[in-house]
Amino acid sequence: MKKIIGNLLYDTEKAEKIYSFMQKIKTSSFGGMNFYEWYSVDVYKTEKDNYFIHSYVKEKPSYKPFIEEYSEPEFEKLLKEIDPDKYIELGFNDFEDA
Image 1 (spheres, rainbow, N blue to C red):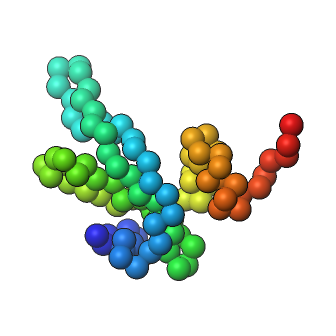
Image 2 (cartoon, rainbow, N blue to C red; image 1 turned 90 degrees about the vertical axis):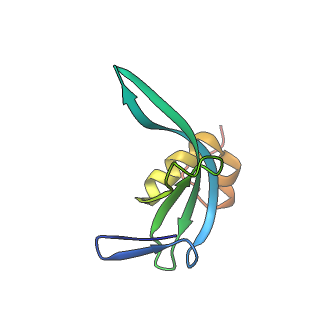
Image 3 (cartoon, helix red, strand yellow; image 1 turned 135 degrees about the vertical axis):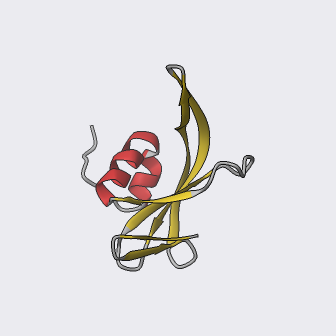
């Protein structure tokens, strides 16, 4: 999948997928109620060290996949919270042993 944001082309075929996770995303609202769906989210890193996410729902093609810019600090924060082993594996080391 490709998307141009600003003057940058984000392409899932050219970038490296570095992480995947599931995220609940609001899909609609009706009468004060919000409806959510679980999306598969892949984090990509380009050759120029830009990050982006590709989100999709495999089981429901009516939910369109999308690409959004993502920053390295956002990615670091996410990994630090949900996957410390991957955080360390990718070389983030802004911590010390207790």
